[in-house]
Image (cartoon, rainbow, N blue to C red; front, top):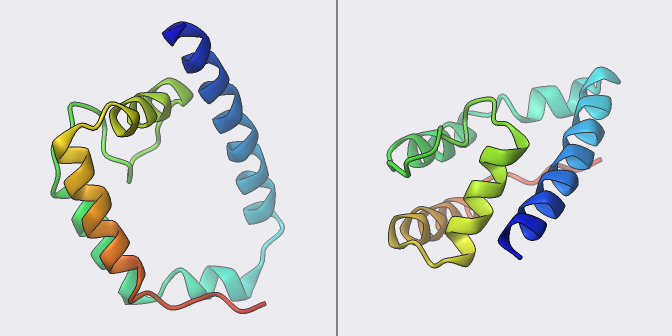
Length: 99
């Protein structure tokens, strides 16, 4: 069953990855300017400050590596839970993109 879930998660991430790539290739200048806001740097520091036996979320990840993150979340990994809690608090302070 775990292999089936892993395959479904990889498939979902493949679709999301394609959508994001298409969005960035469209050259949305307002969005590109928005994500340059220094407020987003704190999120990078949070992610890179946690060691999770997977490449950091800030690196290019394969669908299998992303599925590994999902498995850690679902499995209640304590370090993952701590990182997610810190990211949730940080997210409350980040600017919102207005179209």
